[in-house]
Length: 372
Image (cartoon, rainbow, N blue to C red):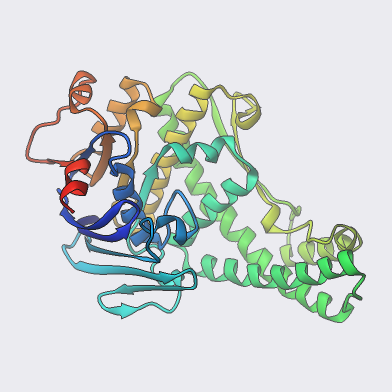
């Protein structure tokens, strides 16, 4: 997969600008604030209908404007081109189209135009809360398994309805409809069992790719990843295990005003030498694990989708030491379309990156903005 051309209108600092990209390595250079990361954001937004920096569309509109427009021309490994348009007219009106056909839901584009981002914000994946890791793996699995995405959306709807009842009881003493909550929990148990099965199956494959990627970066330390289900499903009838857990936790849920058990509380944890990375890892160890996760993400998508993802590498050399930064770039060059942001081309040369050649395109973000 690659993106051949991009148009941005009223997106961040860009009033209106169009640009074309090279098939392999694209270096986006310019001073801080020139708009380098914005180009990566635009590509990600077209592929996933949202930025990797914010979930609020209002944050992405140019100052003084309401809404923005993006257009991208993507091409798959067979050379088939697809035009993706994203138009935001207000906080509540967002239109996404592929080849001039409007999509009825965000789910329709997930997995069509795979990309992997490695940005300073991604540090939260290893440093941050359990919810951030759940979101990451939900996004990843949704791209390769449409049924998983459908079940995830169903689960979210049930959970929202259940939590509204629990919150009304906890806040105002509103009586709980026992029949309704029992029906919701029956439905939730069915969906939970399917989510658990899909997570277990896919993450077995992901872990193999993760361990292999980490060994390429760091041979001395031992990385392990655990998927820890919030509800134990030791043997047979996982649906029954979930149903019983939901019945047993109802009294506590009513006290707390929220659902305390279920896949929305599952844990995805990284361990280095049997120690929880989030609690005990150094900054350098966090970075290495993050890079390994991102490499594994790329291989995982490629294996399932039969399509090479686009790599969006923001401030790579600031995030990692030179040796490993070059290792990443060299392993991707010639096989993937990659985007690298840089403030100084001379610095890239100093680090040993070859910034000349047919496979490379250099884009000056500052000049694009000035002439946009």
